[in-house]
Image (tube, rainbow, N blue to C red; front, side, top):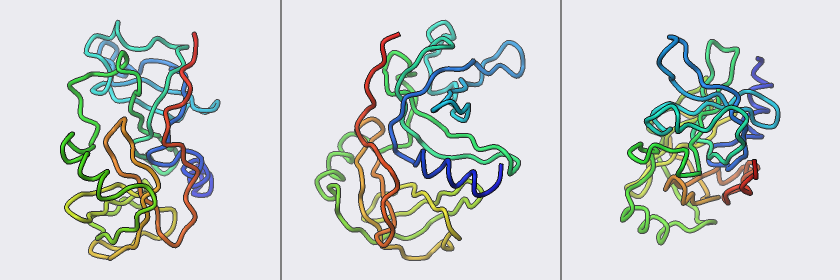
Length: 196
């Protein structure tokens, strides 16, 4: 997959977006231990849910062919040729309730929402960059966020001026974009629940 193809997919599926996806199969590379589920998004088998985010019993996982809602957690590019969009199940029936989603604890989340409603501008510091995966981590006001980065990433320690474009109740994460850039297509509300 070329950089342009990868960037195009990341524009279509930015961090924090809620999407519908169809479970394609359960990935079991060792034959007996499932490591996750491959999810088809808009006809592309590019989504993946880690086993740790799914119920403990494989029989409780959504079966292949099931369509359900997900939040995009991050992007992983493997061997520079394959983009994998990491997903968080929105339906609690399809989630390991003991799993973490990299978000903020309830009390901290309540405070974040009060201090940083959608549209708020923040100034943050880049703490890490992940160029192949097109995201970076930014800290600000005692909290953090993962930000999609399609150009040359700023180095750790750089200061960024960002804007809150969504607050995800599903994962307790604040979604930011570069204040000078147009917001990536984003849908902070859960997608409609399909009927299978």
